[in-house]
Image (tube, rainbow, N blue to C red; front, side):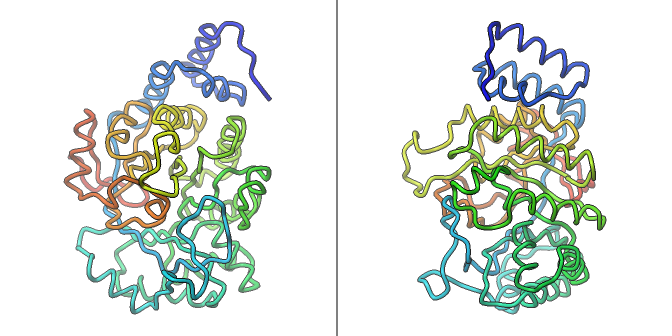
Length: 366
């Protein structure tokens, strides 16, 4: 589809009226906003919605990213993290090796382990369960956020279990929530073109639906900036919005821009900052039933993260320690930030830093 606009100012005013009155935006509205170059107005509208929901608070969590294995059976065109079994640089940690790594970086204020990895068919489902179990036994007070919906679909295939039984097994071992990865763009045209061999759009949504029905709160992402159309970005958001209407199980939406294969990639190989800010703002406007939109500093950098708090973002992610997936694809941001740096980042944007747990319970207001 394409949106024909005879009077852009009038069209923007109509959308502003919808936002002011709390009316839901349509596919055509979302596409118009993407086609508009009036970034200040789009940002102001998103800021208004965010302040209505969250005031001036911006949240962050003390977390650590973990990666059990980078061996993966999939060959997604955008991924530079994956390796084949036996390939140089490939690894699969034993639970004890993983615990050694955690012990080197652990501190008592850590509240979340954020775990994602390859779909390694050379180890059984029980390997992944055991990793979660041993991690939870060693650190019972740290929330485990692990395994994207695409990984859950993969576990279902290698174990013969239903999504529900896979999730229940992992929850019994210590899993509390799913990260949002694996969504990419939720249209089959995109997934076929980008060789997304993992879970289909409907399978990804069904895993989250199942998790929500089990009482689990989860996260949602969008990987944008490659071959998807503007319509597909909005369709992606609307699919998430529909599921949120049904279950209310999503905590936050995280728009992630595609990273080039090299840190030395030229400006024209990266998603423009204009598009990144616009996507955060449009996400806030389209996803009216999501409590939070996250500005992921790993993808957009720290300075743009600061700006994003005036464009609808209410979450700055967390400390991370050492991020690998985006950096394998050429991200130029820091691999992690300290709590003091995050507080400074948020205060520098005129916002109120709030340390949270995984579920947005407030720990400390700075």
